[in-house]
Length: 504
Image (cartoon, rainbow, N blue to C red; front, top):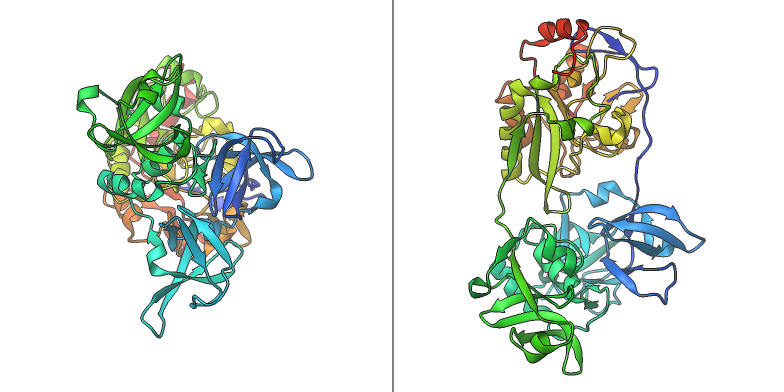
């Protein structure tokens, strides 16, 4: 929201100048059908995991001329060939026209004609953007698609689907589509799966961000523990002896589907849950079942305790206009841009805590996407870094720049910035964050943009909040990310701050 050497009028009539930040993360997109994430920067090393076309990774460092150290959205860190990745294309990645491949192999043709050679053959769950459709002379309906680099191709309607949540019943039915695919250690694509890659791929499409390996999955506290006699289709079933090292999906009573090696087969197969290999194998035995929780909003409001206070050395400091007893810590479930549920947090003033919880409940029900929701302390309360990372946040202890007594409403916990990269601040030649310039066109088909009258705007406005996206007429600039509410406590709180309040 801030720009170097550019001044703006605050809600309290103050003038401020601040600096723009650079992009925080080096995001790359997979530009091959299936990319391996290796345990070493060596093509002959085993996979830690895989990622398919159009999915993102974050680059941690360049290892050498060929290899990068990368991290996938599920936290897997390993090595990928630089040639398999391209720089982020956020207009493509965040497009509301995105669809996914729903078959084992989705062919992209240069024109709507089966007689032509394919441009690329995409695996299950790869992404494309659909920008049109056309029926051919014999009645086939074709979709016009755009690839990451802007290449235009054509796919058969049947091969792709909108990014929707699958029901447990749909996941069970779809799992059988993969029967016979090879077992590949670290595999997570329709080129071949390992056991946890298979389960993760399917369960994630129910909206649950499943962890990558079986041991992590089994210990995930969000998964519900299920007794043996209560197992249902769709439950995750774990095996191991000294430790868990295998996972399957319950297909029907007594039946499981999994990527495994049994009776000299290495494949996705259906087995009996009491198969002798799974129960008498030296390292494989039934170790329990877990169930994916219901898709529902979760939110809590709590006072600031000692443990939380230790985590917020930058967002609240002595002299802040709000004593800690008047702040509340919110834990909020939200939908990510990966179409899965995530849990975030923010700190707001107690006067608006319930309203904010209700607002984000409404946004969750509407599937409004939020990229991340972290305390701004993770960015050392640097507003530029937080907004460049598209982080949704509230409390930030700061005066208005170049002012000795006027506080930003963020200092009161009475302002929230939503998806700030794609809802940037704009005044003249200043755009903040700088990497938000692409999103000044508010007609773009981008998920997570805020427009007057949309679900996000209305959720705040009907509760008496104001939107800085409407500041052009009174102030001469806009701040599309910024919602705020003056609850009439500002003067009192400034007086308290002037008295140098202790931590109360």
